[in-house]
Image (cartoon, rainbow, N blue to C red; front, top):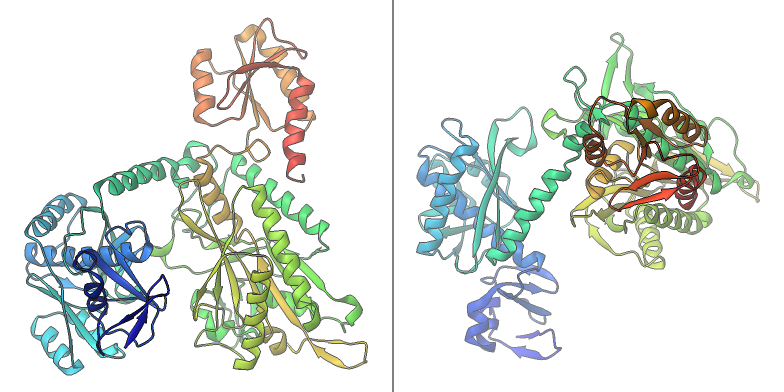
Length: 634
């Protein structure tokens, strides 16, 4: 057999050769440092046989920043954690332990609860394992043998995994710990140069709140201590930027147990919210969208027609009125927009028809899934639905992607895309999905937007482009979505009369660029660390009278700034000027006016955030605020 190396050279190997065999044939040093292979781009354990003719890439300890190399390193680190926990806590039951972005976790059912204080002892035990050294051995066994083994060990979660597994059953063993696992894993623990446990959390078995709640231990691992130190520094920065903390510090919002997952927006938070809404309306108007408003509550029949009753009911808040009538609060706008389009006979001359609505939506998220503004039950989307003909799909997708790039550019973020394809519970035929998926791929290619494929992650009614970006700390966030749908309009019987005087099917593009205002604001708080740009800052200018004798004239400045459209407040507390300046810095106010005896409308002492003090006139200050708004189209 042959494999093709990255330099296009062919490497001859015996039939059934593994990735490790390939590495050894090239050189012993490469084999020693190998951690993983990619066969035709797909990560594969070193121990598995290679397909004949595959394009082969061998990842080594030198590929310390490669996501796949880190994946296998952290997967093996998770198994070391499980070995340590089993040794330290007899009777513990082991569940699952996958690598995740930036680390790994492992779920356990402990005989008695543990706390954050126990992590140090567990981490020390893992460090002892690393000092001793571990190697991983892989074997395949029958499902019956695997089931018998884990039943004998008293591991019910592993038994359940065996019973639901598809394909070959494989085990990996290191030290005295054997785990049910598909791999891949390292050869030995030597590449794990840095290991750290980071936190505890609760997690229901298989994400089902009706199942046992397990203890989830999070950790991370790296190929070098330097990489771990840099990661921990980023974690500290992330804690400092946590939107939940800054939301309190900047007086933007809070949450209350009487309405879990629903933010209470304070006046300063609403200033941000309303500015985004103003931007949404103006940008939509420039692009031919029509603002609409549809009901919040619909009967069961609507959700049956849309498909949501079958596919999404568990995420909806239901309102049973009596035995025969059940209503639901809408979790999305699309079915209402279908009714709106279907309320009249439509002509081809009306298309494309673009409806926009930023309505409050409600989704019954599990309590354990709620997380500040980034995972809520009360959702306000910058939602729109474009009704168009088959021939208009390309132009409308182009318009949506151009709009997206413009909007993200305002916030200084770059879109990346996940092409989410047909799920198992899809509506419609494969031929219909071939068309809609193909159109999204063509649009992404035309606009040169980087994307990866999320197989099976599409909505039940159509494929979608899920939009991602990275924040100021390099973390990836999912924002909005663009979906192409031929199924829901068909279920509602939507058509238009063509130039041939015949009825034709309607296509719908569902799109929300920011995703939801709540999530987007939470992400932007962390992206900027609370340092909102001038046009979006909840308080753009704060005036500080030096003493009581300057307060009256300072109020006059405030009134004129307000009349000029600036968001302004005055701080005349009985505190020193230095403390009030410091407080303004902590509250991240963009412009601070210190107003004393020498200041006037023609000469204001202005301290710009992150810069020194300058002298500006009142008109110049207002012009700065107006210019900041104009630069983003407000």
